[in-house]
Amino acid sequence: MAGVSVPATAPSQLAPAHAAKPLSAVGQLRASRSAQVVLALTVFAAALRFGTLDVQSAWLDESATIVLVRRGLGGMLSHLSASESTPPLYYTLVWAWTKIFGTGVIGFRSFSALVGTLTVPVMYLAGRRVSPRVGCWAAALTAVNPAMYYYSQEARAYALLILFSAAAIVFWGRALDSGDKRALGWWTVTSILALLTHYFAVFLFIPEAVMLVGRLGLRRVRLPIAAIVLTGVALLPLAASERQSGKANWIENSSLLSRAAEAPKQFLVGLYGPQEIVTALLTGLLAAGAVALIVYRAGARERELARQLAIVAAAAVFVPLLLAFSHIFDAFDGRNVIAGWVPCALVVAIGIAGAGARRAGTATGVGICLVSLLVIVSIDTKPAYQRDDWRAVAKGIPARVSDSVIVTPENSLLPLGIYVPALQKTGSNSVLTREVEFVALRVRQTGRAPSPAVVPTSPPAGFYPAGIVRTETYAISRFVAPRPVSTSTSELHRMTSEAGSEVLVRGSVTPKS
Image 1: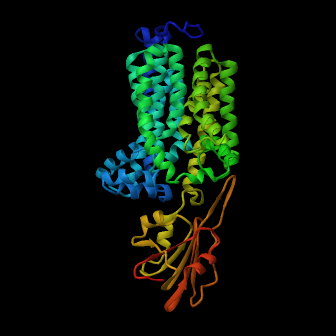
Image 2: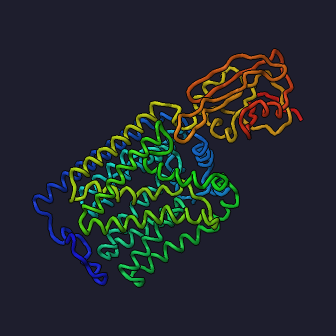
């Protein structure tokens, strides 16, 4: 039926022609090859994600998940609004997961790694709506995309959001083509699960619902839409409470222009990496080339399906951006709109695998995958481009000293506390101690190499230098005294180069009023 215009009043006729009759021998062979390709890509994605799961340290956001989920189920849910800015589904699932696989960093991350691996075959199913070849390329892009790889190794809700969003698109496409009630039912379920994982799933649901109404009529989809809307309404009190806690205020306080530029870069080459401007430009040009192949070489059906997906992608990214720009609601961030990557990747896969330009499309797809793999390998082999390395910092702090004061950057207690037990933040004006350690991390710079960590080299009054450790990811300067010295915490703050530094104590350090 490719290239045939179908009246909107006959949704059952929208299914691909091959769905109405058994596959031919050639079709069966192609389906078998596609299954083999997808299986290989899924195994590769699993090896890539699980094989490097512990390469990077846990960082601030992950430590918040770990601390929250280590509570009992009731305690976790009651503290959710004070700790997070997302719905409870991910935390509930990972809480149960860690009862089996442990509450260490790998135990938490393995859930996201499994979810990220399962996204590969789901993306194949989403692309297969166009053709098995498109499905295979969608799976390939998912397996090697740096952002998909990153979120598959992070103890946060984003990998689960991506999986449910991709699954919702699978059933949305089937319902849109055939009006099948089961597909509508599964679209409802997966959309609800996505919304229970992250509030920004609503920006994919809205355009999907609008197109379903336009194709099938409101009468046929009113109950599925109502179920999803009621779920959103039920989440409103939690969302309002989380908003009032101020956990996401840092988003509003940062430049909207920089956030708007960061989102597409993240879609292309992930959050941070070597030569990210060069790799983002190269990948962006290749992706634009794939879109151009849709415009100039694709068939009518390929263009139509790409148009539908592009509408979903545009709504997922530009609606929250417009809300932020108009100051109605500003929570726009590359992480929050990451589910928009799913329809974007499917559009690119259509361009790569379109029937009209196989050679050009294949070259484009291979280019994107090679650049993506290069970015992943570069990040995994260059610690300066990885997550904040609190694990290495913990190893760099002398273990024999049990009563030191540690001066760290802002919001360090949670991630450092994962690796250094018995740490606490002091609210006293001074502390009595024989050792002070200043910790600093390398500073990320968009489009440039990170700047090295800077720590004080001159000691506080009453102390003398005992050594400085400098690495690619952090620096520690250590100062000791022959006997306990009462030290002003304000003096320790002034000695750092960062605003909002924290004074942490451990062991038998004595706070002074």
